Amino acid sequence: MAVTVRIPTPLRNLTQGRDEVEAHGKTLRDVIEDLESRYPGLRERLLDEQGIRRHVNIFIGEEDVRFLQGLETPVREGDAIHIIPALAGGK
Image (cartoon, rainbow, N blue to C red; front, side, top):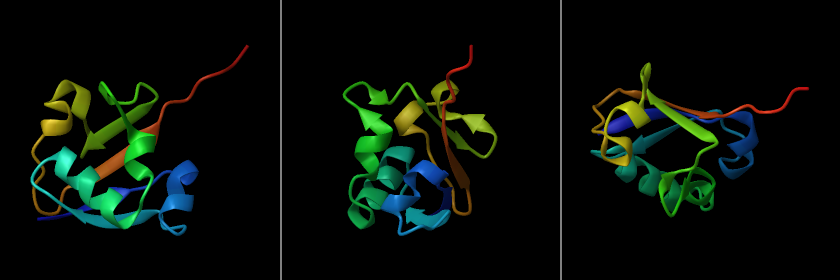
């Protein structure tokens, strides 16, 4: 099933500058693996040994996958997945 993945600016160098790509899979993990097959290096920027990197937020629609089933969160045809790097810094 096809979903739309919105790519943040810091990761667009991996997607040939595209801000939105299509991916396929039944779960978020499947979608990330599909993206990795076409855009090598993307998985490494999103995941570590424990799962989703601490500084990366991933939403399916308006729901943070950390409050769903994480990488095993099911996706449906037409879902929009947003990858949002966490912001840090300040005084």
